[in-house]
Length: 159
Image (cartoon, rainbow, N blue to C red):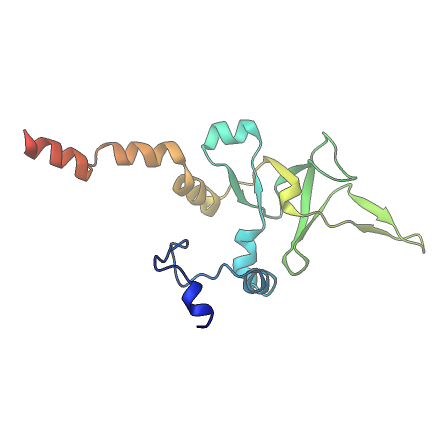
């Protein structure tokens, strides 16, 4: 009469993908030991309302010459600044005019997490354009318009 007797006979499956862990410990390890190629995508920032309207894309990985506005924290302001560097190892962005003075008088740029900024101007090149086209929601919806779903086919054959 061990603890196995108390387990309900119906097994409820919560996860969709069995290969992905929902353990906090494993998820944190995967996140913080992620390679640079995965960090690029994890270091995405939301687009401003105008850009979201224009491209129908909600967020995009930040890159060097994008212009962003800090939306949270002590450096929050309405003034936009250019991204100087994306420091993937430290999970931060370095921006123009977001600096502090060290004890010896030298100025250093302060790192800001990409989730705390909003992209106001994108540096568009061929690859970036491809990404935006691929992620564009309205285009995806238009592509799906011509396709038949199983329900449509079932309704037509049922008549």
